Length: 254
Ligand SMILES: Nc1ncnc2c1ncn2[C@@H]1O[C@H](COP(=O)(O)OP(=O)(O)OP(=O)(O)O)[C@@H](O)[C@H]1O
Image (tube, rainbow, N blue to C red; front, side, top):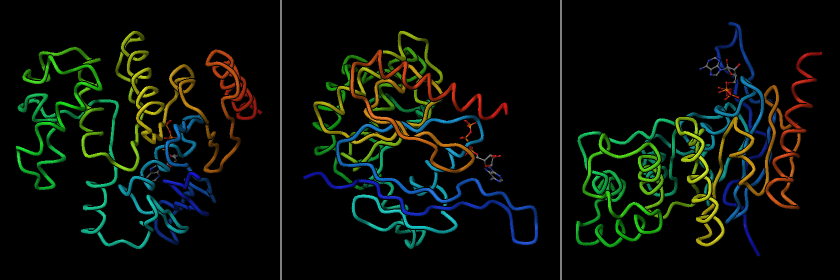
């Protein structure tokens, strides 16, 4: 039986202090992501997607509600506990890669393990293994500035994966890639999910990237609007996603 890797119950996020102009970016959001699931988060601009990702990823605190990751309640952890939790249990992939330019690809991928105090003898096989999985073994000794955008994003994915986190959190990972590299990265994420049981939560605007997911949660005005599951092939799912986005656009223009 699968168990949830992420369990969000009645999450609310209010920006601004009491008595000032307050804004509820997340209203009352509840959902779960099972171990080994690949879930997309979509919705119009300003709907609350990044806010949701930030509160799940511990980068921001929910105002109320409960968020559990890998069975641990993160909502009442202290700052230092959160930092440890993040570095052990979470893997991040951002739009702009966030690779350190003065480190080689190898050193970038090794970083989460070095920060956790692993010895270089232990780090080496782990880095090589993940680089092989992502097809970037040949660029390990290069610096980020000398490799392609697609290779940079694979290096960022390798760094997110190397410490075997409970879940990968990806915020518009294809946003800075051309369509060929975007397709290739999404194929890789799909492969990691299907063959290596990596759990992924992906925020994206792009319906094509989202069509690689197994399930999409649509957010609107800080609430869950709808959820759809892939039942047929990817093309069919892509069309279903476009239909919900069109629905959301027509509601917004009312
Ligand atoms: N620090 C903040 N202070 C006040 N309001 C904020 C803050 N961060 C986000 N918001 C507001 O919360 C709402 C949700 O923002 P969020 O960035 O989560 O949306 P999004 O769905 O990710 O949008 P986009 O697709 O444009 O990135 C927006 O109206 C935004 O203006």
